[in-house]
Image (cartoon, rainbow, N blue to C red; front, side, top):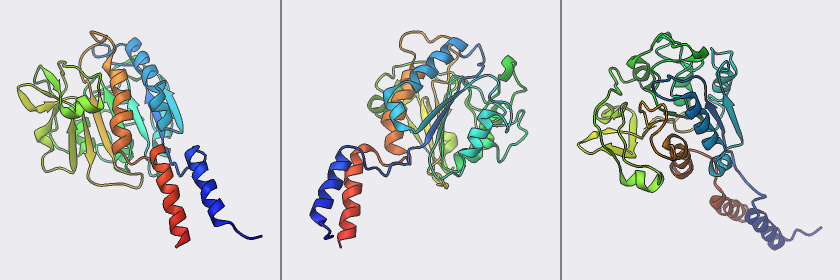
Length: 296
């Protein structure tokens, strides 16, 4: 049978336009919505935030699978969340985990600082994956089982970032959206962060920072921020986003930015800048690039 190259190209183009032909390698997304430090975020707010993010159409379109882990799912390596984190490390795709409750369970990092180097969450990020946190000081402590753990304190974040003395201590009072914040997180409004990034502490480290809001009087105090590793891993480019780190059991005003703001960050910024698979706009060009290469 004679091969009709022109017909073959037309069929490929039609399939690409219809979204039937794809080289997509979309990763997986896990949410930890376990017990929270009640002075920082309420359990009701955590549930609402998790629902907002996981049910957002844009977020759903980014991933092959979305899982939500709660109380009892987070204790140690053999827990459901621990197994998810380990199995999604060095698996060849960029995956994302979101701590909607602002705490750091033992499946991430054994408290108090029992694995200062090589914790599950550090390995996950160094492999080229993404962690997003809201509410409390990132990696500070766990509340699994509804009981506050022995604190990692500031050393938790310092160890995961590999920056001795790293602090998210309170400073600044009027955090205003940057140009990036206005572009990528349209719901972002002025607020008072109580656990901001101290951006000067990242100078000379293997991290690049993108700030979405900075303090009016101190541009080195910022929140929300995403840190991007300059050292890629097997899964892609590792990133850590700590966002709206503020003691607000219930956010004053609607909507709660810790939900819709995280969804906007993921859909608008993360999808554009993380090492995810080909998006629908790129599928056509990828298909035609393959066809042209085959014809040469």
